[in-house]
Length: 266
Length: 273
Image 1 (cartoon, chains in turn blue, purple):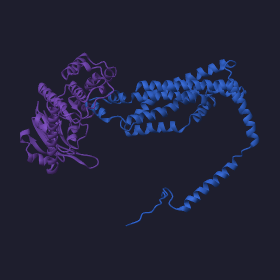
Image 2 (cartoon, chains in turn yellow, orange):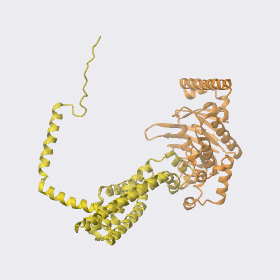
Image 3 (cartoon, chains in turn red, cyan):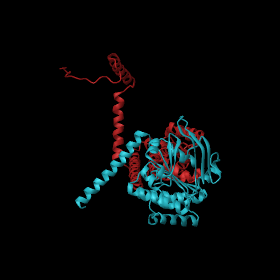
Image 4 (cartoon, chains in turn red, blue):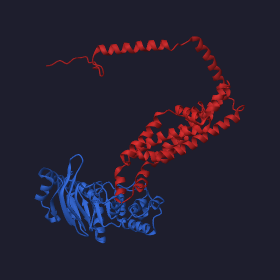
């Protein structure tokens, strides 16, 4: 009768050699210690910063909606305008690009062109694009509108293209078999299959665009972000607190609103 | 009349789906296409309306050779050929009416189809066909709200709304229960007789083919190995089409199913349900 061992240890999965494992762990630790030393954490600055932070928290606890209300209001209107227009224009441009970027519908050259547009749009972060447009067209909501439109294209077109590639091909085959043209094929076999998701994505992008409009305002692209930036520059933390609360409120409303609508549409 | 001459299809991967297939189908004749899976049944009917591009050969529908037609002419040729699919292939999120009207896509302009403003005669025809297949009350429902049998009826109505000169039918009963399968087959045969329509029907169920078809073509590995009436379809012929082992298995399977059905029926009658 054979005897079986009573102990078992999990065999190493990635590095088989013991030396490699220990060496790597030590290397990461050494790097971390050296790196943290170079960050230059300074206790005096931390204490001073904490005091400023406390003032900020106090302002936040006593938000002042009234003294800068007209600035806040015009900033909000500008942000919402930017969000709304850029979402609509962005989606309108995304639809043809998304169709062109779907492997099962577009000829090869069109596919590569559309995929490249999407890749460029996704590679550039909103803040960087905003800096670029502000430098080109000056401060204000026009630069913000362009930035958000540009970002929307990459987002919607990519996800739409993926959804088109996942459609049930037999439905498309059936429509093709009736002698339908390419446009009729899109309208009758593709559109009904991707519409619920396109609407869901559009609503989702609407709330992303609103949040982004607050961020890009800080680099000069208008909207509530610009108002927030001014308030912080003037040390008016109570107004800044009010603006943050309003942003959080609107994002929450947009989030719940869009998820409710998406559920309703399914 | 449809005539297929020396049709060959070789896929890019090198798989030879069809080799030198020739036959003709007369007006009003319903031909069953049988054979094991992978024999090329599906490739054959898709070559006829060029959803699959034939490698060589000719396909003539009432005199027009469909092979080598340009995009516009192909669209005009396709609208003369109605197709009915396995798993129905309805556009599920469209209404039953839109699905039936989609049979007219080859005849109307993009704007007419986009705005759903079809000519009066098309709408009238769609209602008439829905009435014929027994679904006139379901016209405004979404296609995915229907049962399997009902969906296949919509599929039939869609194909007929093209006013086709030929019907291609791909495994019409593959996902239906036996009783519904028979109803659908009966409906198809009746419609072909009413309209003097030729049809090619891919079918994996041999007894069903023998019961309903006027003529049967057997395919094996892309070549025609049998062409005759259901009576001529003997055990020997079926063994050639399916191979000895598979045919014995299919026949035994069918017998077992029948036995199980009878057994179940006896049980039920004994229980007095």
